[in-house]
Image 1 (tube, one colour):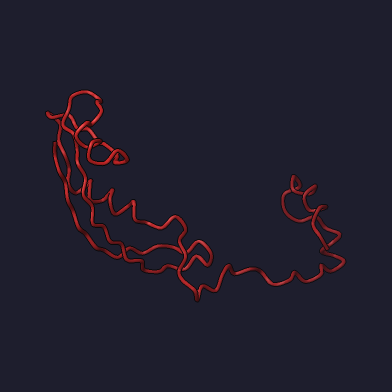
Image 2 (cartoon, rainbow, N blue to C red):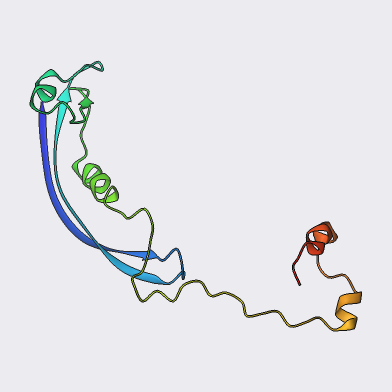
Length: 124
């Protein structure tokens, strides 16, 4: 069995899902994982005796373990599901009300004619 422990802190730049502004987000990981060295997929009886809910990872004894990749994965698991820059987020930049088209603009079709059916559904 291989016991891996790692502690890391970093700051990543994310893009807010609402306003599309970039912001810095701190990431912290303090991880501990037991990896079972086995050639085949087996149950991890010793780990399961200690904590039946614990996930069990296996690694080929002749394989290799990349600690940098493992740490990257642990930090990646700490990323938020929804990127939100905070309480002061201005929200999406919605367009202002459309001005009424002039008679000449309304008479001439604009854009791709395949969208004409959808243009008819627009609310006034």
